[in-house]
Amino acid sequence: MLTGDIRNQVDLLGKIASAGQNGQFRTPRHAIGLMVEMMEPQPRDRICDPAAGTCGFLVAAGEYLREHHQALWRMLVEEHKLDAVVKLPSGVFRPYAGVSTAILCFTKTGVGGTDQVWFYDVQADGYSLDDKRNPLLPAEKLGPTPREPLTDEDHVKNNLPDVLRRWRERDGTERERPRTAQSFCVPKAEIAAGGTYDLSLNRYREVEHVQVEHDAPADIIRELREIEAEISTGLTRLEEMLK
Image (cartoon, rainbow, N blue to C red; front, side, top):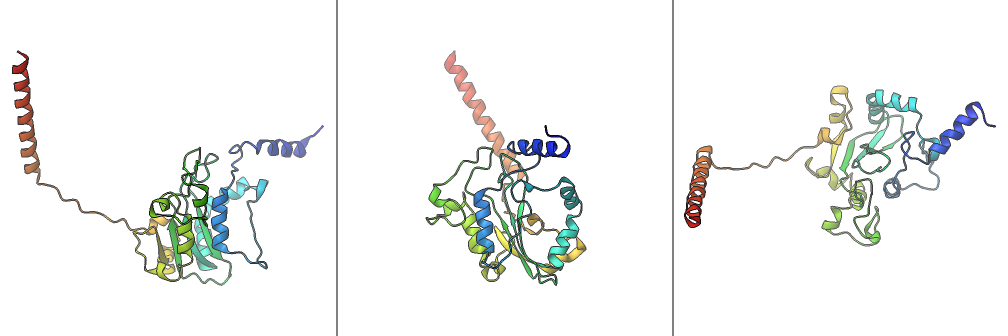
């Protein structure tokens, strides 16, 4: 017979198979692959995955992080070297969760070093963003390093190869990209301004407004009256034909 804390742990592990009951969900393999390709880990590097396997996140710790996210963002920007914020579409973790997430890439320095922070808005990861998560492309065109090159049409369905390519240019041509593009850089001074250290991509994105020209209201009304007159004339002729 199992009693006390041991029994509670067994019951919890038994429930983990049903994703979502305790807040756990699996990171998609292609998302993990993108992070690995971006980090390029070396043999002597130490890798930390605080959410590995069934360890998950403690509820109290999660609540603390939500309440103190501004302090954490400030720490990443001021005390370490924040390199990138890769915004993922909200359906990446479906069917387990529909949360909106982002990949934060930073170098632990303890003495700062943040200069330009690279942002990328991932809109497609190669799979449908509903609960089915069906592949949108053949297997050889999926993931961050597909076996076959992607066309512009394929890119619309899988942004990951473009993320990886542009990540490697974050200190070069990416610095010149406009804020209206899918990826762009933001200087540290702008992020630190105001003291909020907001790392939301939409905070820095510029929306390109397209000017739409239209006729004057009086001209539109006159045109509508002409159309109405034509309809009335047509109905009159139809009535005469039916007599």
